[in-house]
Length: 209
Image 1 (cartoon, rainbow, N blue to C red):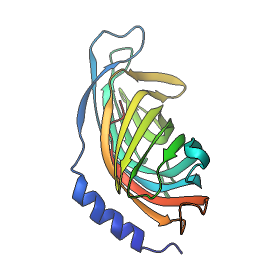
Image 2: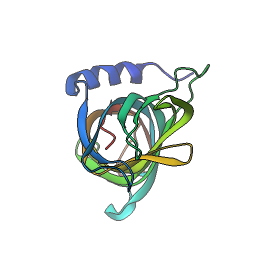
Image 3: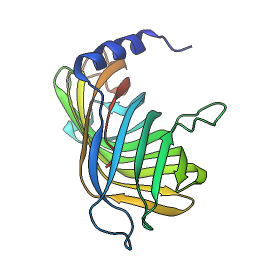
């Protein structure tokens, strides 16, 4: 069983640097949709992050991954001008599974008290969709993100998120979403010369834009 202490640390760290995130963002639904469509997106995420090697040899970049969950909602207008709502996780699911994953290339300084950055892509899946009364259970978002860490605080910038359901694009976001979060290592090398994987519990808020 995973030690619950990191989660308590996360709760404290997030409370120190976070408020509730809710953003009004400009979107373009589909190619045939009217211009200047808008969506309101709000969410909070949490999960486990793995850095394949820390620090990266020679100050280069290495690969990492994230698995976790996001609780949030997206509302907007699809390409036919119909309103839609997507809720994560799907409230009709008996056992909600992790719905947020990411892969990225990172550069992390050692010791951890300094800072680091990462660039990668994310997928959010399994949302409950109501698109003008048509309900499905496959609401997804894919996009790119950048990550800047200073100590235990992180800033995440998300771009190009595409919202889909039933194989169709509901909206293609055009503007930037910025959120903040906390980074709590659960395994740290004893010295900067002791190269090995690093794991951390991370949590925060972000706009999916």
